Image (cartoon, helix red, strand yellow):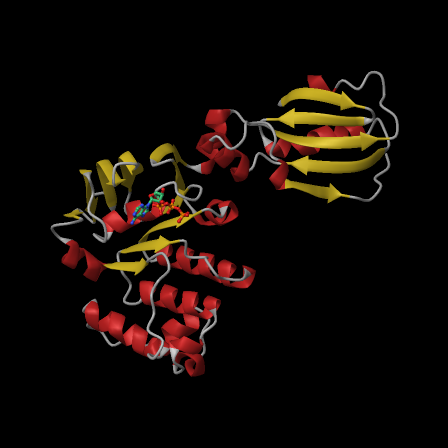
Length: 322
Ligand SMILES: Nc1ncnc2c1ncn2[C@@H]1O[C@H](COP(=O)(O)OP(=O)(O)OP(=O)(O)O)[C@@H](O)[C@H]1O
């Protein structure tokens, strides 16, 4: 039984806004599924339908095998939720928020609130403070703690890294993996591509209300046949370099004394570097991976394939001589 299943799910706001357009989405039990898309793509609306915060215009949604609308109350007891812009109560402490979740979700076993606070990076002392004095990141950590409390079967997280610093984002990713390891399904939306890449088993890309791609990152990459490339600057280009003859090299371009080598399999870049290094003095190397960013841009129409600049990183700025 899938953890989430939507069938022709459509949501209109008024006459003009088609927020979700005929969405067929399946998230299997135990998966970490990244729901990706630019602003306004329809991610939050989809999550809000799954939570029965919003009623669909057409189609249906099932969560843990139950009807998202008819069985909303039962579903809420079995899922952990981090809604977009989670509302907290200024005068209640962090611990009181956790106690409230335990009560409303009918968590029966005794809960170690300090352990939950600790998992999301809040001290017992911070947990005893009214939430009105929390920073944005602390509030987001608490909201995340509220979602994972009581070991829910499914976590629905809307932009969980919002407001977190890089350490907080890393910690959040680790908790998501831990939750998946204990058997939970995790469905989370993001427009932070690296976050999805590092933690998800599978992803779906939304654009303008439609699901434009689903699959593993590797499968999506392969589908688009996007290349990775490495640019190698040399002092002088040898006449008979013979790079094209190396297995797995798709194309070689020459611009001045910089060779740009395209490969389908990023691990072949090192073969190209070695080959050139044996025949010329290498001055600089720039590696460009087919990034998730590039995938994303390709599927959402923000860019064509073949740029990947945002994932560009220098692997060497020092001189490497043959
Ligand atoms: N309550 C509402 N009333 C009117 N329009 C809405 C409402 N909620 C969402 N929309 C519109 O529906 C579309 C999809 O919005 P949604 O919030 O689902 O996108 P999103 O992918 O979650 O974006 P973001 O990454 O910015 O949160 C947008 O055009 C938005 O303006």
